[in-house]
Each structure stands twice: as C-alpha cells, then as structure tokens.
Length: 139
Ligand code: CMP
Image (cartoon, rainbow, N blue to C red; front, side, top):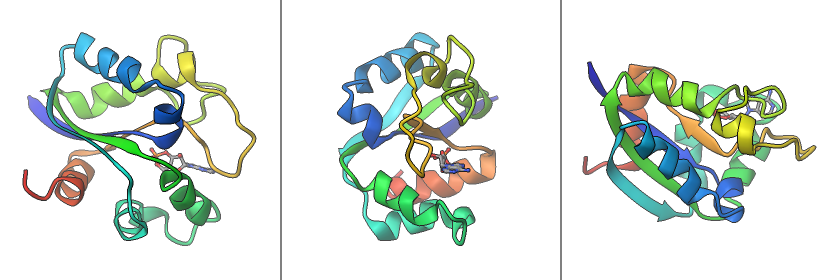
C-alpha cells in the first residue's frame, strides 16, 4: 500500500553536496516528494526525534552532529516506501553497507563517535507518523 516516510539528508550529506544525489535516487525509484525543507534542527526537535536513543552513549554526539549544519527534511510517498527507503539507504554502518545503496556507495568511516551515515529514514509506520508530525506539523 502507499505509505509516507520521513527522510533526512543529514548535515554530512548536505556538506558534501550530496543532497541532489540522494533526492535523485529517491525520485528515480518512483517515490514522490510531498514536503521538502532545508533547515537547521534545534536540540529540542532532535531530542524528540531521537527519543528512543536517550541515555545511549552516542546520544549527545548524535544531537550535536545533527545540529552541526543544515539538513534536508523530506516527506516521501510511495508503495512500501518505509521499508523501500531503508533498503535504498543501506545498512547503518557505511563501511559495511552494500554497494548500490546510498551509504554503501557514498558513505565512509569518519572515525567519529557518531555514525555519520548521510541519511535517515523512519523505521516503521508508527515512527513515520510520529516523525512526520514532528518535522512537518502542518502535514
Ligand atoms: P539514524 O537512522 O538517524 O538513527 C539513529 C542514528 O544514530 C543512526 O542513524 C546513526 O547516525 C547513529 N547511530 C546508531 N547507532 C550508533 C552507534 N552504535 N554508535 C554511534 N552512532 C550510532
């Protein structure tokens, strides 16, 4: 069925001028952009977005990284897009992500405390609804 998911082109990808490449792959797959915004996230928004990671050792570095520069937030629509975008993004760790995926093709190990892995995609229908409400309250 047709779903919506929240995609973030993270600050590392924006800094590396990969926004267009990521969005090109999303559109080439046949997904539709229904919302798109370049913005710098606040600590409050990221605290909510990453609520499930509160207390983990990488939480603070993760929030710092996500605030380190502008990111691109998008709502993407398509047939089974939640699972499909995660497949397109590849494994969380770019060093082992499969070739053909965003992280596998474009990701690298920066040796930081956070996995700087270029993109985020909601991991379930529940997460997608929650995250879309957080980033695009008007939608
Ligand atoms: P994302 O899909 O945005 O969800 C949580 C993020 O935390 C993840 O991508 C990575 O950027 C980061 N992350 C996940 N696991 C770890 C880990 N074990 N160590 C450091 N960063 C992580």
